[in-house]
Amino acid sequence: MTPEFTGMEDLRGRIVQMEHRLTELAPRIVAMEEWKNQKNVSDAKLELTMTVIVDDLKGIKSGIGKILWAVGGAVLVAIVGFILSGGLVHAKEVTQAFLSNPSQEQMASEKGCPAQKPIMVRSFCRSKPYSEVFALR
Image (cartoon, rainbow, N blue to C red; front, side, top):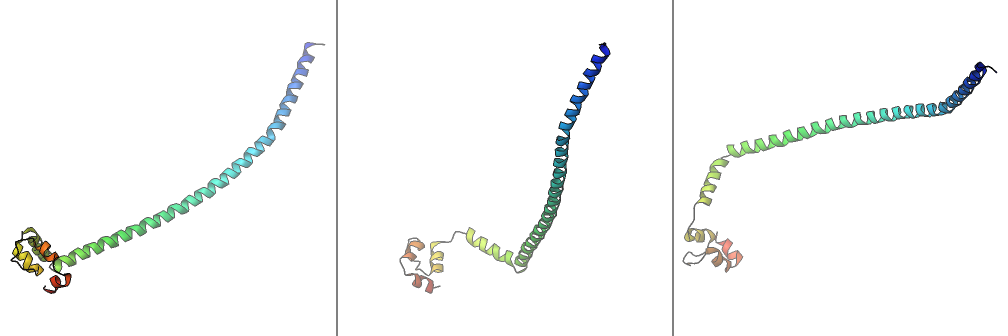
């Protein structure tokens, strides 16, 4: 035999091996294409779901913003109403009353307890019945 024939048989064997490999790869390629299609479908579903969620969050954010504006407006209206009703003048009087240190006689006269006792008014008034202290006011 000539060397050409041995080379041809070697080529034929190689071609047969490649054909076998191709037939083995075909099912794997089909399976990968099916997986890719399923993945594309699941990605599309996920994207649609995320779009819906984002739209819902935008609606929630706008609702919260409206609620905050309403609460802020109510606080502002309450402050303006307090000022217009003379609340600052009254608050100034109350603040001055708290800052001044009243004597025991003033405290006793406010509580309805006798001022002659040289003890703290609270301890003296505790000894009296509750109804008697508040009836004198």
